Length: 75
Image 1 (cartoon, one colour):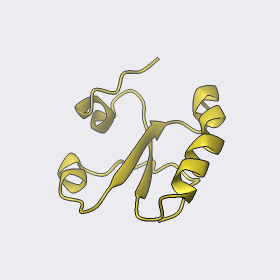
Image 2 (cartoon, helix red, strand yellow):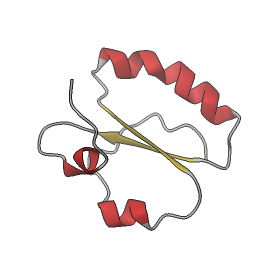
Image 3 (cartoon, one colour):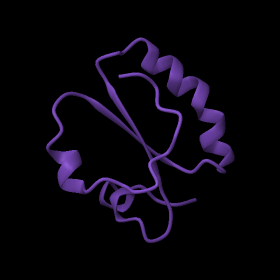
Image 4 (cartoon, rainbow, N blue to C red):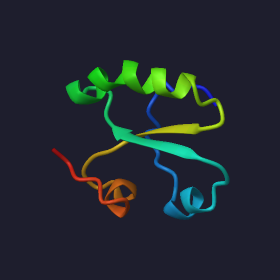
């Protein structure tokens, strides 16, 4: 799977993530976040060498439980 440019606004359920087969990179962030924007070139380069890795770009923020379930903390 190729690098994903667009964040999912509707996050998938944790059960959906837990039952995925194969390797998956979960990227939590926001399209307006400077840190997230700065990381995009590095993430895209890393994924270019790993076509076997699925990439899910998930918009994170207040009231979004998926990131918290993975112990992601807001800035």
